[in-house]
Amino acid sequence: MATLRLTLLISFLLGLALLTAPRDADGALVRGTVTILHCRTEYMACASYRQRCAECVAICKKAQTSPMPVSATSAMLYCKQLV
Image (cartoon, rainbow, N blue to C red; front, side, top):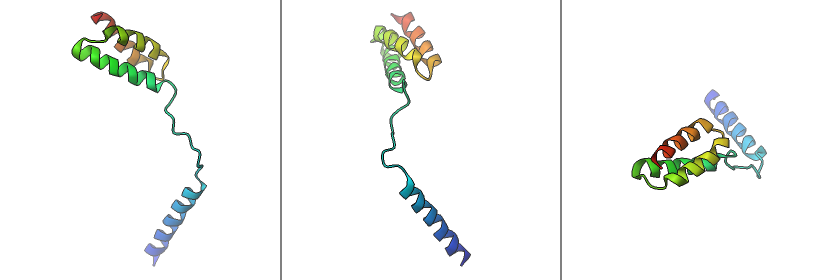
């Protein structure tokens, strides 16, 4: 009987959480995340194939204002060496 009550309580709380959640919740990425992802893509092309290194420098320089500036700076410096 206690197991049934616990199951009903959990299902009630999950249902209540579902009904009270906002419908217009914003699922956008954190500001600057797209630029750091673009920087990583260009970094991989530059590091692996030695292509698009100039683009890597430009994009990673722009990504230094993102939430992860240290990784963007290190990627930019590495790409700058290969240009």
